[in-house]
Image 1 (cartoon, one colour):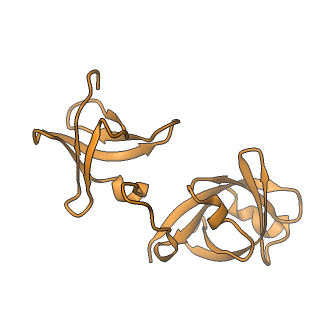
Image 2 (spheres, one colour; image 1 turned 30 degrees about the vertical axis):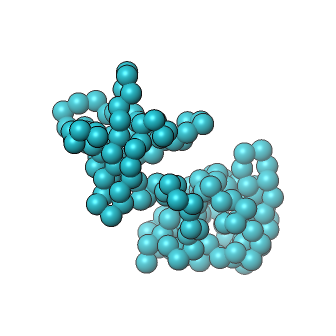
Image 3 (cartoon, one colour; image 1 turned 180 degrees about the vertical axis):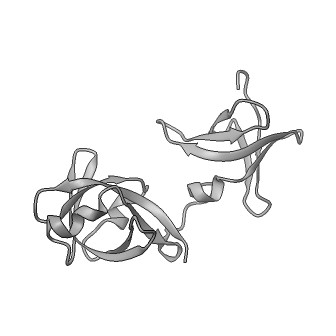
Length: 168
């Protein structure tokens, strides 16, 4: 079964098993709500299914308690672990939007057919994402994900067609 990251347990909070979670999903209100089943990617490479008991917001984090883990001694071992969902639990995205795992690994080429490299990472610095393109014997290319640059995403053929702007 494939799992996808939706957050990371940063630390414990208090003694009643609450954890501070850094959210990495675009759908926090759907992923993190009472009664929802998610998975903890434990340090021993095992997936542990948990049920969310409560969720509350604190600054840019969520404070979450899991059913049957309402004690700091039970939850502490999961500090720094990732929170995951299965592929079946992924939301359908609108046309033209993609999950990071769908984009990473795609080949990038210009409209003229020149091969630029492979997308190795997706950065989210602000208004729009930036794709990091690994190029052979060259520095990485940073591509802003905007309509003027990204002309076509072809998941089936594992390629992206771009138009390079002046200065890229």
